[in-house]
Image (cartoon, rainbow, N blue to C red; front, top):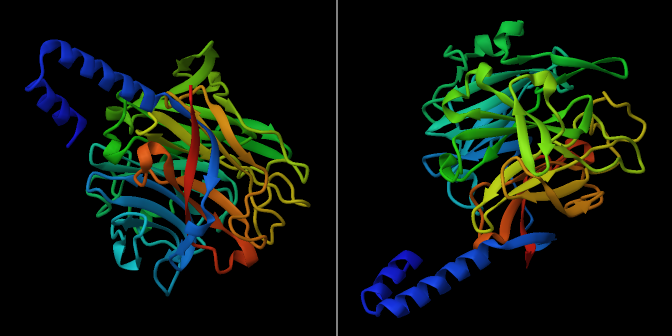
Length: 405
């Protein structure tokens, strides 16, 4: 019996004074349950599971049909045969899903394995799935992004369209003219020997199934600054205007604990400053791409992110080709999707089950949350052993250790 029906049953049998006392106890229990905050993370190595054949990144959202939709890069997902630069996949069921529960969505355009386009942030809002597709500075393969294209699917992956309404096809997918991108070489700032650009690597805040747990009508996005990935920038936009760049607002500054926003991208400020570099080198450009998930059990927003270094390589080099170390791993929480953020766990080197592993690309499932928010599922990529046997979907249950405020 739900709490609501229990209260109604009690009300029909008790006097007014008893009703009031029970109601106060009910409210007190509810407040107490939401007053816990995370102070640490326990990793349940015995739950570590690796699935699929080949691929990485795994940005995901929980859609209106109760399925997870995830974007895979550089692989073939759950099937043998030719590989693609990116795919859109549907995952049915819970964390125990098998290969039979995974489907390749036909609307995602066919693209070459060495494509320089990569699919990242995705979100489901009012039965529409949105995806950020970024373009590498090179003609093929993975290097730092310089532009971002916003795509959407009104039919759960059967077709994809650009923000302009134009259908995305295998022919249009590889277009590189500036007008084919939503963000193109934005706000250049010099870094080492070239310009760094803004908002070319974007994640969406996940608010439950089809954004149903959102507390306001804004969609929130997160992007590490390319010139200094320790700096996290943010965007918000009314959900009915996701495809309208003129309606985008950028986090400007903290006024105490109150966030200020601006329509001027160049006036944006730092929402969160990530940890200092490790002893083995500075953070490289593909560092601190976050995943933010609303946890209804704790009534908090949980962020996971990571930094990567590779001794002997420069800031702009491609990471994790024979890399020496795994990434770092950090967790933060906030009462609102824009913060302010409180750290509660940080590991400088997260090996994820073995010293041969080179972990990166951490995500939290927006759906598989249990035990009043204390249990979540962590998902990541692994380029160890030359993008070897663990270069696929990796998942593990974690426990958020909490205390009362």
